[in-house]
Amino acid sequence: MIITFLGTGTSQGVPVIACDCEVCTSTDKHDNRLRTSILIESTDKTIVVDSGPDFRYQMLRAKVKHLDAIVFTHEHKDHVAGMDDIRAFNFKQHGPVEVYADARVQLALRREFPYIFVDKGYPGIPQINLHNIDLTPFDIGSVHFIPIEVMHYKLPVLGFRINDFTYITDAKTVSDAEKEKIRGSKILVINALQKEMHISHLTLNEAIAFAQDINAERTYFTHISHRLGKHADIMKELPPGIELAYDGLMLEI
Image 1 (cartoon, helix red, strand yellow):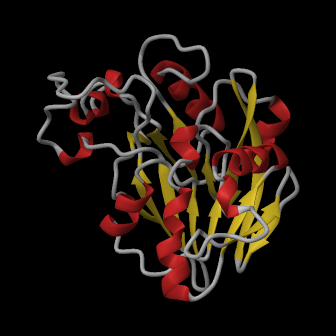
Image 2 (image 1 turned 180 degrees about the vertical axis):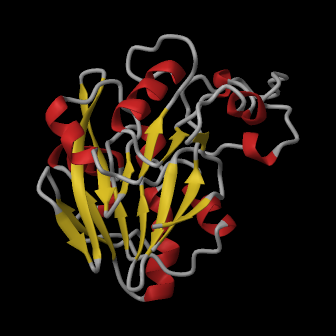
Image 3 (image 1 turned 180 degrees about the horizontal axis):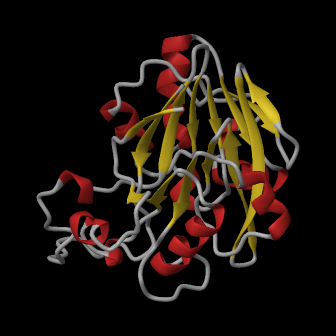
């Protein structure tokens, strides 16, 4: 199974157009971060976790020709805004895309994309089959998902464990019970927004402490604000076994 990081950035702390900060003007490709998402390619399924505003470009950049499913972590715009662009896959595949979301996220999708859910839809609108998920493990083809509930300030957000790979974005706190689902992972992906304290995201130091507590063989930080700094500089500050993820990074699990 191959995991590709489609995006490792965030709308949090994104500067105004024509910003001249060191990250925005960097020529290092590792600093060019689209909104956070991953692509999962197994022997039988192609799945995306979250479809943010950059979804269309991410699909084109990664040369994704087929899409079976989207799994949503939560309903914030930087994670759902691009769902309309699945229509190209509908056209090519002659059928709907499977969408997996909890009850609260489903309500948000119906609110944000009401035209998708009308009884008599306009020709060419996105076609989806909506599946309800909660904290119960579920399968998409051969891919087994174990949901992990984390808290994004007061908002519950889902992370997922797939085999020995755990993917979490938008976390600030994780209960001991949910941590037990993560322990034993060989690869951990967790958000690290910035160095300064933040009400709903782990800071760099908090993410390092979390990673050291879980003690996975490898940890990658994602959902990175430009305020964190340049990739090359931050990599020098990280303990062994911990790295910054970057757009285009591919992992075999």
